[in-house]
Amino acid sequence: MPELPEVEYAARIARAACAGKTIATVRALHPSQQRALPDDHAQSLAGDVVVAIARRGKHQLFHLGSGRTLHVHFRMTGDWRVGSCDTPPHRVTRVLFEFADGTQLALDDSRALATVTLHEAGIDPCPALGPDATDDRFDAAWLQAQLTGRRTPIKSALLDQRVVAGIGNIYASEALWYARVDPRRLGYRLTPRQCVAIVAGVKRAMHRALAHPERYYGAEGISAAVRFNAYDREGKGCRRCRTPVSRIVQAGRSSYFCRECQR
DNA sequence: CGTATCCTGACC
DNA sequence: GGTCAGGATACG
Image (cartoon, rainbow, N blue to C red; front, side, top):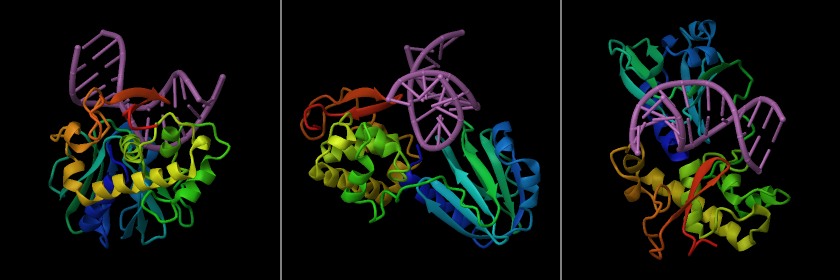
């Protein structure tokens, strides 16, 4: 699933493909993308220029010459594919961007949950987001302040983009494994020391993935048992203590952790 | 807090 | 052919 490191990698691909270029056409090919980006919005993009592509959490923001912003969120299975305008769309291509120079940027998304939306100048398309997981402003003091008074398990808090932006289900489990903290622990009961460890665990998970995009991004062929320490390793030995990794469900999502060394 | 919704492919 | 997976949002 694309989380902050994978979206950062994707944004770089999009920048290399189309930053500074003039849009020729944009087409939404799937009903759910057509709902998000109606025909009149898509058609109004012709002739606009992609001035810059920014990333915030898991959001990609295409800043346009007109002052408008094209907001892209990959959700579960979105990804960019770069080609030329004569490349036919794939079965899973949901939105197709074509540029004046013949470059094509395809949003491929098997589950069709990704969104592309157009926003007028002056509108911030991102919902309320906390600091990026990699940002210095995401520190132990911030985390503890966000958790006080909330009776929510730390795992769920890490998935809340208002607390910290860019973490998804995979790196939430990884970060808590690094921090040696039980995902069920209620946020307001964490010690300052544990908050420090969690922030460090988040940064470690993020920076490891950012440093090895080829190992994580689009690495379906590489088994999770190789890529991760906790995620998707139910029953396999903890890499620290060999205790079998446990899987539980929190807020409808799987959490993986070691009962022995995560307290 | 939990649960449903959106989607489709993978898996039994 | 039923279930599951999951990011974000909406709702009870």
